[in-house]
Length: 220
Image 1 (tube, rainbow, N blue to C red):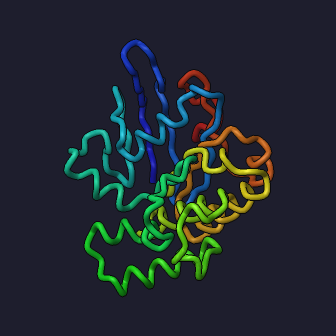
Image 2: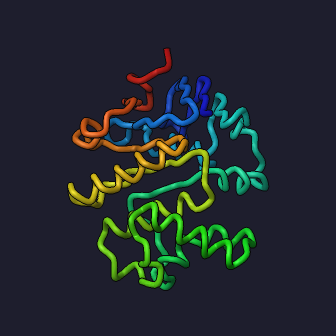
């Protein structure tokens, strides 16, 4: 599903990632962890095409992302869900409108959008809340909306960058349980986090980065 070969990412003289070799299987759940500045967010940005590698190859399903033109990146992202720490919801739109936006953009019919939105809100425990606005929701509920938005297209890969960073312990556990349930449906899930407690509670493979190098969790 995901393969990295001698991947480097530099910003001027600063190396964010150094000679990373990695294989992540289809349907796997893995953590990307390490101290601040270790390269966690950079790796995710490379995976969804927000950044390009300086050297090396990055393959998603056999496609070399580093060689994709800007015109082809939207098609790549439609097969990928992304969850951010700060939710990135549109506060002037309802929960249902936020969740269905990706389908709206690609011209999906209104009845199909409504069915899909209802289904994913059920998955994240927000059934019947589609008419509310983000500002009326708790932080944990807003992150659930963000997760619902990320899975509306039934992506094969879900990337989550510190998805529990702004949540208290109970809400963080709820969000992790949702991510776990999505993984059990067959989606490959990568979660960037430094929360050791959550990683201990939900034990999956850990990809630990230090100063841009992958120091734990390499494929054997």
